[in-house]
Length: 449
Image (cartoon, rainbow, N blue to C red; front, side, top):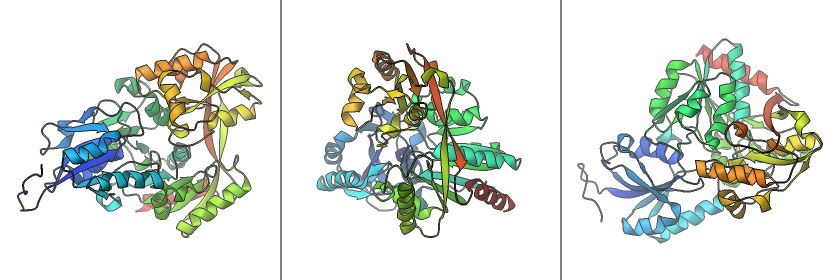
């Protein structure tokens, strides 16, 4: 049923926010919370397992939502529109093929609702500290690698950086702010493997990391702890903070994805600089084509090349052996990345890669059925049950060793019945203008303001 007019005499519009536990909640907090012109009847969730059938909590939803807001699977979208007389559906997640997004739009419109997207002006917060935003054209492009390069250059000036990470609120939604200073905080906040993948390298470098659900509160706390904020984006989403400098990481191994996926094109168009990552493993034609594609969208952005160099902690375990490669989960599932850090390292050490597909069980097997994944195992751990599926899948594979291409150290989370080595990527300047010199200039200019 349609709600009554609000206090200003305007008809209240019923809305659904389509999301994946991140951008959707931020858009609500920025645009809909305490907004008398809208009644958000539900969130829908997709892309990430185990994030539906929850409730956005009352303490974050505001005075208009005394019972909180229910979260349903996106599969129920059309029924929810009809059952709740929904006027408008707001698409609020990232790393989605344009074609797939418009199929969702068509479903919403056919059910009677309008279909909308919120942009920078309606969703970004302004900081009183300088902000460098690191975005990407796809998940798995190497944002955190570039963020660490930026952090290192900031520290050379004697300034203190803090990393604010795009949200991954897969657990307790009532925790508005998460502040990670050490590995003990991972246990404190009971984070998933996917969250650990994004935070662990920063924590290892002794950098404070902030995340959570309410980014106004997060920003206020981060500002008290640092001189410069580095926004470390998620997927290919744009920043929740208004940036003084926007750096976009492009992946030459996924050709033309910057013009195929939402909101990759937005990121390239707003970029001050574009970093072609993985230059040492991409062909010259791949790099050239990526530069040309990005330049067509944004001819003013400076373009740099960066090498992603592999470091293996226990190389003797894997050298010339039959190995199972376990890669970063989101990158090889909805990120469509066939090969990651683990495969690059395996090739470097002349390993034979063992395909695990026929040994996968439970939710890991389901991931292979849903996504086009290469001869690797996705490090999915969104729940304790899924971690058990991952452990069983790994231990089922007949191989000499396991090569962990995920930043999360699975050796501490599950029992692996074979020797296991861990891979890490480090960014280094490639040919052409040096990216590190550019960062130094940007940091110097921001601190003079």
